[in-house]
Length: 158
Image (cartoon, rainbow, N blue to C red; front, side, top):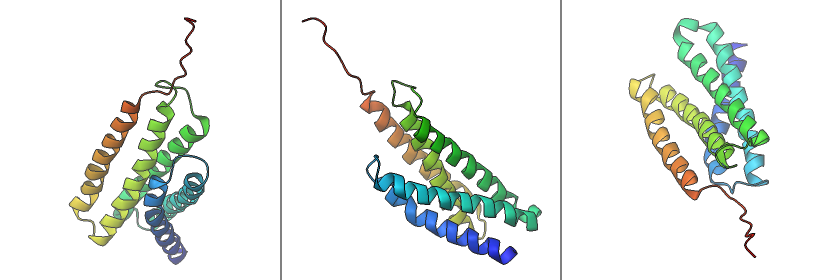
């Protein structure tokens, strides 16, 4: 069973890493973004659940993996909730900002896991993806906020 979990974890992690950039760069509308996003979400679920299973085998050594899996799953569920429900916050487009932040956080988790694995758990591998990713998310969020809400203005002065 351990080998099966490792394979699921590796395949899910590879798929998520390969899909992250295409999903982020795809036009944000139905079609490519939503299709790739669904496959990416499946990879994130596979990665998170297999992380919990692997944690059960070696809890003292893999607690960080379980924590990252729990955070990834939480961010994924939140990001998908905002995309599906589209609650009217911040002028009607706030759901996009929440979706962007939460789903981008899952990408940071994928990159962090890869970096930690490649560096044998070096502290920089744990911190650098979060620092760099958070700066990129902040910049993208600022751009989205600067675009302002899309409002229909009706001129009743006629």
